[in-house]
Structure formats: C-alpha cells, structure tokens
Image 1 (cartoon, helix red, strand yellow):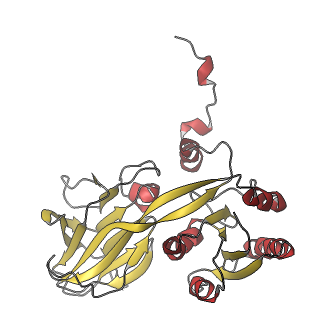
Image 2: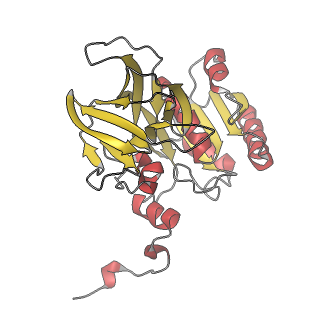
Image 3: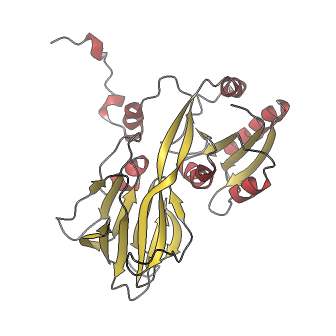
Length: 307
C-alpha cells in the first residue's frame, strides 16, 4: 500500500480521539504523506470535503472512534473503494474496529501497511431508493442511500408511539403485511446490531445475504427471513395518514416516505473495505467478547480433549 494521501476522521467532541488523530497526522506528514483531518459526528461530516479536495487517489482512511463513526465513514468511502483502518478510540462495543492495543505502536502500523502486512475484509452493503407506486416505476424520487448495517422503515413522532402497517414484496411477489413498530433489512455485518436486538438471526459477516426482521410485530407468525443477496425487497407504508413513516440508514434519518411511495432495498454494487491488523482475527472471538458469551469466561484447549 502507498501512503501518499491519507484522510483521518476522528470522533467529534472526543478529546482522546482528536489527540490520536493529531499524533497520526504528524507521523504521516513526517513520512511525506499528505493528510486531511477532520471531526465526524451528528453535526460534522468531513467526507464530502475530503473526497472533493483530494488532488490524488486516497490510499487510506483512518477512522478513530466507535462503530457509529465507522458506519458514517463506510457509507461515504465504499463507493470510492477506499480502504478503512478503523480503531476503537472513544467508542463502546467496537464490532467494526481494531482495538487500540493493536494500534498503540503507530509507527509500526505505518510500516506494516507499506509492506502490505495486513488483510482486507470486504463487507457487503445495502442500497435503497424511494419510488412512486409499483414496480413499473423505475425512476427514483430520492437519492440513493447506502448502509453497512441496515435499512429500517418505521415511523417517527415526537408526540406518541405509532404502530405502522407495512406491505412487503420480494422480487415482485407480495409476501406479507406487517403491523408493528417497523421493518429492518440488514446485512450480515448488521445482524449483530439493531437486528439482533429485534430477535433476528446472527449471520457470519463473510456471507452475502439480506435479513428481513419485523420490529415488535403484532402477529406471532411474523418471523425474520434470510434472503439471497440478489433479492429486491419492496416496502410500502399502508394507512399512514399522519405522514410519519421514515427511511433510516444505519440509524440515521434518510428521508420521509409519503403515501403511494415504495422503498426498494437491495445489495449495493460496492463493498466496504476494512483493514485487519490482528494476526489471530476470529469472528467468533469477536462475538464472544462483544456479546459476553460463555467463551469469554471458559478457556480450554479443544485439541487436548479426548473422547
């Protein structure tokens, strides 16, 4: 990997994250690397400026923060194919990040990247657009939205909790009408996020699949579905007289959905590229540690077990 142009995004209003960003920026500049640095948060989005200002290809995006900071970066950087080195500085769970322990010797990290001593994970993403009417209308009325974790269609109101009625088609075939708090369409990466909180399945992040999970459905027959990656999921709000239905992308408000609109969700044609520095990376170890499964307390060498 070349390190001629690097962008650094740190968690906004987090002093520790900003301090790490300043250290890394200085080290990279000492290696004749051009660096663009800025905060990322609910009110700060540095990526449009980064991408528009880059005079040459961006070799690396260093993101310092938690999963929320990383999700924002992935939505902007995946279409450009820019690899992401995400480090958990100031975050909480850190499903998508390298631990700060792996990152402590930053000079060694730059050496490893220059020598290509790392792995890259490519994670599928979702895209969604809003259309008018049924599937014959193929011109969207909104921009294309991207998500690494999930797309969610549910109502939002400051006054009360609203029950939504949503109709869903898969590849043009009506599947069901869901009455409840909404619907989640997630990737395997997002299966350990909002989806698992709604009793959806956990899928290995190396898979390609779409997961549809009802949120608190008012029918015991409404169950999660795991679909092939080529599926197109269409969702219509029914009876939304108060105009409260919204499309949410990775927990961020995307757009309002009006009566007569449909949301089409499918696998995106781009993937998020994550750099892995850990030599012993294990998806199952991540599950054990982040979800506090019994494997974090019980240690044994399976090779030594005998029948």
